[in-house]
Amino acid sequence: MSDILIRNLDEDTIRRLKERARAKGASVNETIRELIVQAVKPDKAALVEEARRIRAMSPYSDIDSTVLIREDRDNDEPYR
Image (cartoon, rainbow, N blue to C red; front, side):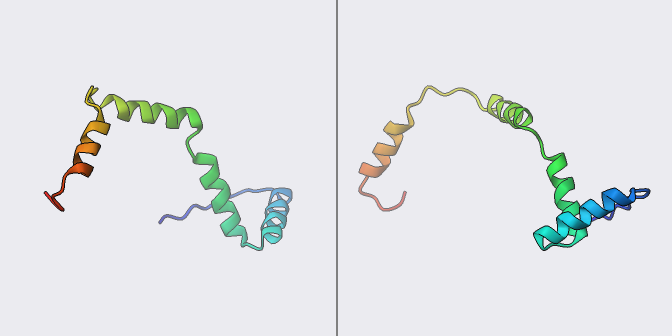
């Protein structure tokens, strides 16, 4: 893990961070870490785009998987 040093925060911001941390029963460091993690999470549109990109890498198949699953379930062999 890396460390980040944030300089020149005004006193009001520091006070509000301390209040928020105290209200949650957490440290200021933990509170700031959670805020940063939340701020850089991808939004829903980015996640949908990533899912589309991954889906595009898989070729379309017209095989009905229910037939394969039924065949496997009906097979008497314990393992193949």
